Image 1 (cartoon, rainbow, N blue to C red):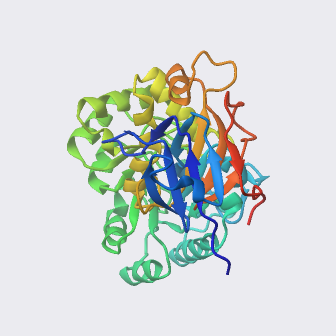
Image 2: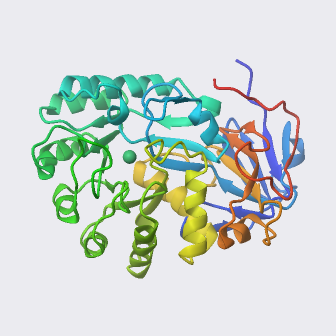
Length: 398
Ligand SMILES: [Zn+2]
């Protein structure tokens, strides 16, 4: 195995950390070694010019790779719901370097409802995606759909075989409250449990209101702005006040509700619990820009500083779903996106564009220290493009 080339990013105009507490960093260069961030500082200070691959950001903005924490993967780079191939490859071009599966069983053709199939599917997905990275993307899959009859031994076995997440709300329960024992068992074995919330999004799922969520106590209230039908406004207030669960806002949900939840959470000092996802592919479609679009909506309509909106889609997701990526800090995986205001925007940089509701143009995407994409084929063209030397751009799904 050959050593991975060292990489440096230089001439960074604005560096967004992904950490809500310190959303920007005062540095203009990053050095990457063995796929991880090795130094952050000045060009000379990090020894950038000795790197084999150099990404000259030309005064533009670097953000952590976006995380889509509600992505409907099943197996491979194919969505049975929308019958499209290579959608994950395309999501990378939207700046998404990691996704979290929202339960492979939800869209698996045939939707098995027995516990043996739920367990088998989760283990199979965890192991398949551990070795499959479309365009370099990290697919955190193996999200078991909680079903009546799953036992403590089943959860122990799943945890042993790489299943890290669970999804509640699509199993064969009589009443939405009936799954509480399985939620507890999953949590006991270290799984992060995300519950469906709001009205039914697909036939066969049940509405889950705030009372049910407070009873179930999942780690994450999935698409709390509705997937697609939102919770009652007072119910949302109670979730913020009476629980510690993470609150996921999705592109494929209710925008009015998203903005209300953002405001309630901010007023309560609970912004660290709010995370962003696309909840696609669904009936809403395949949306490679689903996450960056929500970032721009919250920044422009919700009056949230853009660097904080980005933290909701990166560091907050990583914390809620227990991922290693999501922040630009020493030792973390080098999952990075270089972006700028799009051509024709009245803004002069990426954060200014987001504040106006313009989607930034992406000119370089790096995953685990490897340049995967130069100019994005999905975002608008960036005003200033990163210049990349020392590497041929990898492409295709390996
Ligand atoms: Zn969903």
